[in-house]
Image (cartoon, rainbow, N blue to C red):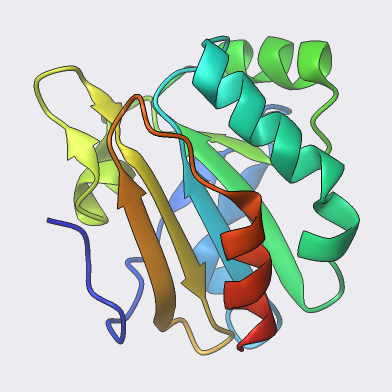
Length: 152
């Protein structure tokens, strides 16, 4: 079960596709976060969803909001995926311990070893203000992210 709106977002520290460490606590007090879990790099629905995020990146990410994608793929797979798809936001590798962050957010599909399609808007104070969790085959709508961020 996904963490509830109103809960404190679990902190994490993961490497992005370039090997840089990204820590949620470092954004606290500075930026809200749109955290987008996706099952697997290079798959059709994930590629489409993250492509939509990239197309709307100017509206989603700014001095007040940081977009973070997250899957259990390795940092190296994330790099190739981001480069191939032209993704200009951090893709975090929840690779080891496998799925620890997805599990903390309640979106790890233990049977398949990948996150469900969970998205969370986290305010500057670190509180989850909005979330949606879809099953593996069900794409999310980027317009919902825009509405959730506008409501902050």
